[in-house]
Image (cartoon, rainbow, N blue to C red; front, top):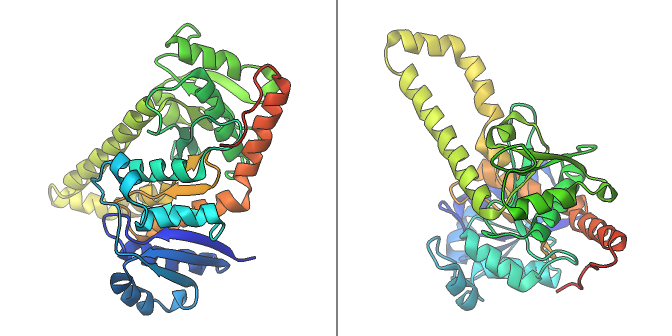
Length: 347
């Protein structure tokens, strides 16, 4: 069965090059894919012609308009109806594509996607979710920046969505769900976090809630799903990215400090390559906007073609595993068990 994915051809620091090259890489791994690409034909056509893999697999819709990386999200949403980003999201709404991917402005993409697609039944706000490496296996963390202030309802919904994703996409049989907090004791944190914990403990949810965890527990792989508000999640993500960059730079400096260090690098190079591959950020590229009534994936703006291809894989997995349908089912069951708080109708 053919799976059509809409691509914002102009989103990202190195677009449209990385978008076209990444689409070609994804297609070689998943030949059932087809792409609906939006962008400047004058810039994209020569790139498509140079990759024979994409011949007959890409429909290019011309638009010279795109969302700048530094554009104000509110302005982009109001004035960006003909941009490559908006047209990619519109394709999901119309059914022309099963998912949309952009490496462009995160705030603008979230605003457009929420306005056009609305949220799933039972979900008040979408969350930005991504898989991150740990000492054991990848963990899904949400929210990573969509909702600066959250209620206990929001955190409960994030927990349900994260648990579904971990189970149906990552294949974890019984995901361990945790709330990120300043301590593991039950009395730690504010009222919102404590109330969310009490609700996630409800045995009728059938969620393996393991309680509060601290920042270092995330990278230790203590949980499979980590739930937090968008402010905390975004700060944690940026610190993790900065730490990884600092470590890489420090290793480079050490191994170039003299002939003994260079010799040591030659001896340890196979192990260092394994380490690099294991924690390569391109393997984890592709943040999901969970909770929308449609599949939208945000690629890192600074990624290369390999990272963009991984974002395509993430989008395809979300569609093939019927992630949104599973979330709807879980929220309906939750509402049925709590008749005093029925799921609201789809927006």
